[in-house]
Image (cartoon, rainbow, N blue to C red; front, side):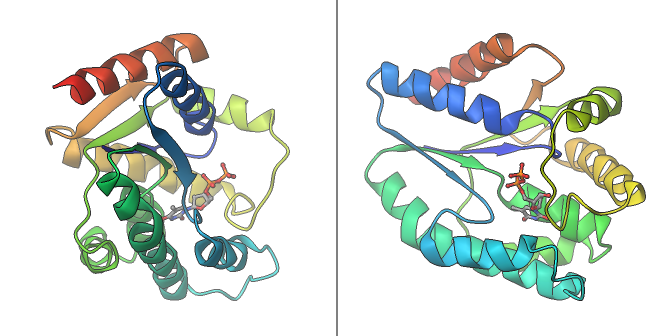
Length: 206
Ligand code: TYD
């Protein structure tokens, strides 16, 4: 089973992914956790280029291609083999992130980025997309508590506002898809984790 965690910076998806992973391992379910951009040696090298705050001249198109290149290597080298070994793959960000950041916020167009990613992923689709839905207010207050800052996080407030609008747009567009699950990320860590575990086990046992 291939499960992706999607949502804006600061929505809590990385924390919950780790909690879910530990719970699955406790239950003796074979699982791996990985992230994008990154996940393999080559993809992590691409991640460093993408997030390096010195790379200010990186164009939007190049950014989208590097994200897709990183993803493609990740899918073929790690994700597909793990799925074939019947592992549960928990992935921090996937195609939805590119649709929102590159397609919507960078104005490259959702459909174009979708096509690029169909090529990059060899058509690999998540069995479950966990969409972390959080109010803009909660997001801003959570972000204030962090002190990380990569090239994308250093973008101006307008960009982050556009990213947030992009997530809402994507939610409207995909909410009826059978693999799309909206997670109320305004709740506390243990409540969100329990909810994610319950829907994952429902699917896993089916
Ligand atoms: P992430 O690792 O989630 O950030 P952090 O470790 O700081 O929580 O993602 C890094 C950044 O890359 C994030 O700002 C979102 C962005 N991104 C895209 O723009 N497009 C993509 O396709 C992906 C996967 C990430």
